[in-house]
Length: 136
Image 1: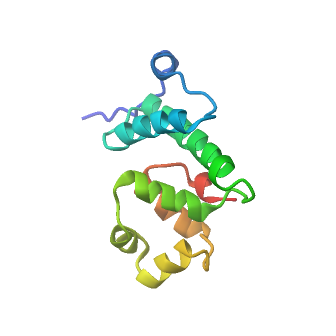
Image 2: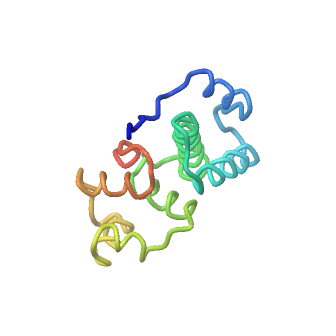
Image 3: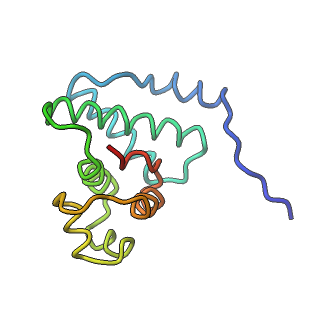
């Protein structure tokens, strides 16, 4: 039995972009709209094109929320982790299962522990996102 690797289809991606028209988020209403799309995409198996749109929207949302809610803070991995946790309906207990320790999860969420490359990989796989979302 042959396995087919899903390949990225530019035409399908163009259709998604046309349907959703993602752009830089400037208002809370636009942010809510983007969050709704992300939530929809998060809870299903995504095609490569949907995954690209998903990653793009997460990046746009994070940028808006940094500038709107925390204008003086640099992009930080902890805020991304909290954001993904909130959006995915996962719990701290789910994170403990992935990372192996309640203390580690608490330290990361309280910014007492940096997210090292190994943890970055685990979190990226758990949330189905690009690992670079957890880098400064």
